[in-house]
Each structure stands twice: as structure tokens, then as C-alpha cells.
Image (cartoon, rainbow, N blue to C red; front, side, top):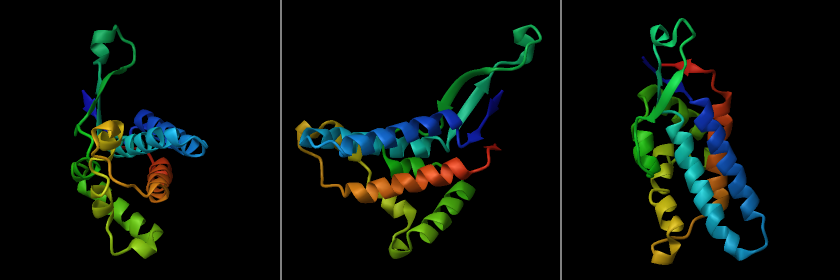
Length: 163
């Protein structure tokens, strides 16, 4: 049987951990820590979005000798690293709610929808993870941290929903 927790609590917890790790790395005085800070922040963003699009597969109770059903596996319904594509794959109701909250929180950026903000981070994870290839562009890390904080607060405040 397949069920969808929105958000997936385990993936959400990992996203929060990578966000915090990124912020801690950013506080290090060594400039070499800026690369892992950006990579962890980009990965946290990816995980926040994936936490909204996971599917759980449970074992049937009949196969467990009368025991309760248990989680057999988790699957992300949209793979990849581009935040805009992960966002596009979300249920429309989830996207609408996030857009509304984003506009409320970032009044000064109300002309820039969440969808467009996320598109600006496409390629960030790959480009900074492989920075030695020379494709990384400048990133406004404090702005990215604000977006990550938005996702952390909004997703952790959501009541557990099952689809």
C-alpha cells in the first residue's frame, strides 16, 4: 500500500539538519568553509521540496503474521536537484499555500513569486558541489538562508496530512 505524508517528517528533519550545518559552516572564519556552506544550503532546499513529495510503501499486515503494518520503503516522486522542477511536481494546493505564505513573509519580494525565486537556485547544488569545474555563480547566501528559514518554519508548522 502507498501513502503520502505531507511533509515527510524524516526528510524534513534531514533538511533542517543540512540548513543548520550550512549556517554553522558559514560562521567559520576560514574562507574554505564557504563552499560546503553553499552546498549544504542548496541540498537543504532540495530536501525541503522533496519532503513535500514523498511516497511511503507499507508492508501488508497479512504478510507480517498479524503485526501492525510498517514502512517498507520511501520513494521521492520527483528526482533531481533543480528546485524549480521539484516545486513544479508538487500538488497544486501545496504550491498555492506556499506561494501565499511566501508573499506574506517577503513583502518586499512580492513581485518575485516563490516559483521564480526557486528557479534562481537551479544548478546551485551541482555547480557549487563541483566548483572546481568553474560553473558556480555568485549566490546571496543570506537571502538563501532566509528562504530556507521560510521552508523550515512553514513546513514544521504544517499539520500532518496524508494523501
